[in-house]
Image (cartoon, rainbow, N blue to C red; front, top):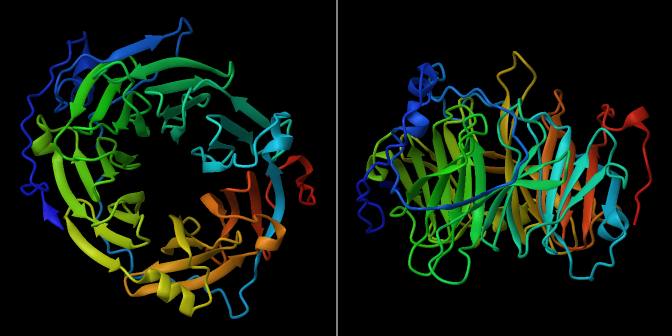
Length: 455
């Protein structure tokens, strides 16, 4: 673990960017998001279509009530899954060839799946440069699927943002150098953001996220001489600047803190996980803490009662837990695949983690780890500071036949703590929906009818 004074040998020397002042109290309330962001002022290309965006009332200076920091493993109730753990049942799955009638190659596969804030919409990006959206009220059916094509190279990021006031907005980025806002109602890119061009070729993006009620868009680049974290003010459709000294290789992950709207985490191919408070006036002051995972980072995410902690998965299949603000390493699992294999869990690779809270009023919370093997089997484990305890297995014979690339969680079961719904996407071109064997179906589809798997 490194403090903000030691940034892998990089010195942060960044002048603040002072955005043009606006009229009235709104300018003062958004000060931390527009006037004081510690960016290097550089010209950035922005393309706008004529379609007007929904106005979003943003109060950038709002503060989350202070909560006492609690180590996630203390007082965490075990999920209580008995021996002979019930398997997850495949409720439906969907193959790319059936989705939109396209003649897709055998090597077209699902790279990522995620859900929006209320679990009614899921999205995925594919290796054919396409983005698919799924209306989960209608299920994984052709009628409930929307295909959005517009990127000219591999899609690398997708976010639904954090605003309940803009439910039709979807954000993506790609190696074609475009970060975009799509409107689901039109199926079009309504905003396009590009990085400054170093030459004839576009600057590829590897990651994207949107914060501050969808007013602040951040995207990470992968460039030969530097990697930048770029910011745009979506309301004014203008660039705000960049961080350029914290990462020295491609930025693969960006996550705004869901409770502290002016704080975000980034991770990259350099093995660093950086945590920023973007209210500060320089990049050096904004950098709160740095974790060196010593391997390229594949996934990061927040967890804990106050979202004060971060998990980190690496390309060398290691798991790290640390306190973001205190720059304290909480746990490190360099040999985690061996531990998983000893419990009979699939251990060829780690897929992702998810933080699951119990029902309202409950103090129960769990950090779940998802691992997989090359036959399509995935398994859930409960993570504590001492290790990982197996919870349940998702049966591969009912769904995936190849590596699962990504998972998304919906509606945890209040009795067991195991998610009642899981979406998964894999190298076999399938997006599968899973339900827990002991969990009754929720209103996922009209009528709640159970369907046979579609191949």
